[in-house]
Image (cartoon, rainbow, N blue to C red; front, side, top):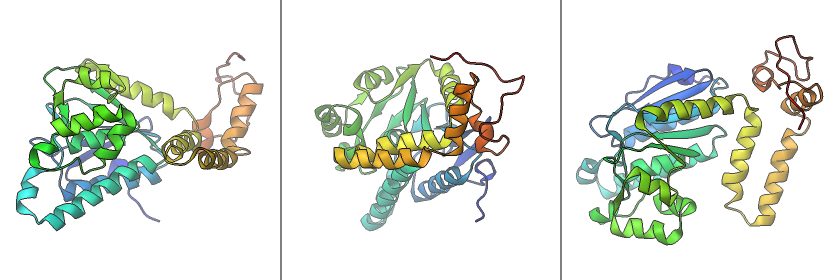
Length: 290
């Protein structure tokens, strides 16, 4: 199998880089980061690359634009393309959103700018959403003003994060909110001054990088997939995911590190730089048993 590493992708509408095992994906389609089918297909390529790139252990998803995270689907396309073609694009968008949610790498959205319609849906597909507290940013789902619905998974994702009635009211009125108001509703997880958002997201991502990626991924899948199942089925799913970890190299490293009173080196084990359970070196930092 030959896939380009994430930071070597040649994309027209996105920039990619990797810093300390943290991938940074930025949407870059001036003037407003609106997306069309070409953007969605490139995003799909990026997500698939992330899925297979062992060097990428967490992803920051942001914008190369200082004013817009994304205004959503390109309205010009609605006028120029047939309804069938736009419908195919909408379906493709849903599939890309689900690919983000089913890829066992954590995605953190960094929203610094207007985040509307399909742009908000892109953020909702991520596992965490950080937003800048600039009151000039608009956040909302205004599709009702076009005689449409939030058709890129928004009708299903938004009510999974905020109150069902509040989500429906947002879609029916098309009302926009400031980042602070949207955070109070539960749309965003954390709010920061715009100049601090990337550092905060990167700091969190670096924490994730040190954890066993297979366990991080199984936690994500247990939550995202389990919440869609009846409880008994979800518990069976959890059991199967846990069983995959029991006896694994990362579990051996975690148990050994605990018993030896040292920090586990999950990154070294997963990248093949260290044998699981290998005795601590002089550089290993001890930890206190709880």
